[in-house]
Length: 197
Ligand code: SAH
Image (cartoon, rainbow, N blue to C red; front, top):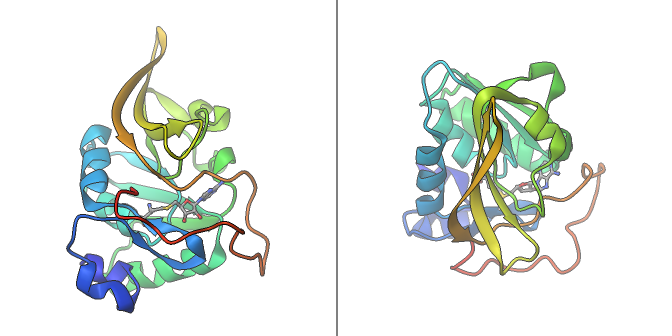
């Protein structure tokens, strides 16, 4: 029920295939992009997944139905708390959330079968590549600017890492460092446009 993951003011738009604004200047991804990333993860019910960028919790909720356990990292406490309330309301018990810097992953829970990053970076964070299992896969938007991002599939094989571009996208940036208590929405954060992911 995507309407439970958006602000009441946007509930009427919950079933349109567009990204919508959430608290802290962030966005809930476009349903098409959530579905596309989920499909590309090629999940198995035994998988343990790491998500970077909990946001509303919608992507994590979708993943929770398709794998054993989801660990999800968010830098904004307000978003993490709201997502936890939604999981409780929906009876979702296999998602664990934490506030932290997603660049660092979640070392105590590593390695992960799959990693999904829902904010864009210039390069795949090295700590996340380290925390990916051999034979595992990461789906991450990469790009130098907001207007030039590609969703990329990274596979970790015995022969090394392979990268495959999948789809042009527009995600909010993967910011380095966790948001401090009482941190402000960054200057320049703007209302989401329909083409944003
Ligand atoms: N998956 C979300 C959409 C997330 S938008 C959903 O389904 O709603 C991207 C999120 O990544 C934002 O909430 C943003 O605060 C978070 N983020 C950005 N940089 C981060 C970082 N370094 N560590 C953790 N979360 C980060």
